[in-house]
Image 1 (cartoon, rainbow, N blue to C red):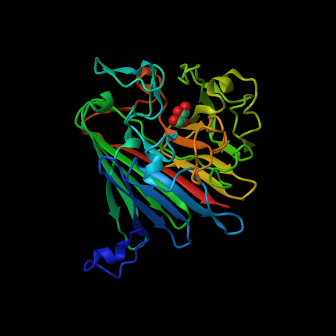
Image 2: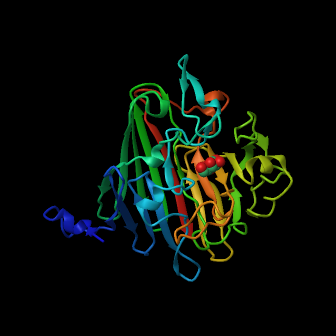
Length: 369
Ligand code: GLA
């Protein structure tokens, strides 16, 4: 296994500059595309691994209450497995995260048709979304803490979307164990954009057990009800008095099996909460704590919503890091994003991006005990 310490690589540049970013080979696809794995480590030993294939966060290791470093996301340790079937583990999702009804939308008086890759609807950018492309890596070396920027040019018409779209996603890890993800994008033609990260967290063991005892709090008074196809029905609904009320820290599993139409449609939680605070700077959106390990993850974001998905797939459907099957509810996703199907719902915050505008999003997952 080839491991490159960037400090050495820079050779004559500033060889004494410390670097907490290392590169290792991750694999090569059938058409010869090479993927690398970028490991960012902070002084406290926490680490994040990201590959330029799909902009995927493959691993996050943080300490538990005893200071023991452990894995807290679902994923794999080689490219080969990510080229196989998996439910978007850790991926960067785009151009449009979540669903677009009937795989079509109207924009500037013109109808755009997208891939119907989720029944008759469009999901996560189509058959070959941003989670299945090779991003251009651009390691950003800094005295204090290095970061990884990934760039991708999505050409006009890709998966049916208009406009040549230049996207960058920058991952950095701070000394207080916060993984920050900065998104930016520009276009040369009016288009739509809704980016997110699809990490599945399991604060106990990275996916061998279920997360039903994890305690969740979401800073939201409303959520978006869905229909049988997991499409939003339109109006927001109050969380008060429902199984969607996470205004106080509550075990994810407490009400997940309730005979509630919304939970039946979602096969568990697969809904967007409308966040109370949406500002230029990332606002606190949610907190999850694991009574077993003592680990906590807090979500901060500039996005107006967060999609909670509780890995509602059968136990023997997807494999995990050690090759064994992932249990149902083996992880939870907190996908900071705009509302699903916004192009067909003018009442939701707009996802339209025009030439001359810069799309920006900052989302932070901060780990503690
Ligand atoms: C999102 C969707 C889910 C499922 C997962 C994995 O969380 O809301 O319905 O599709 O992605 O793809």
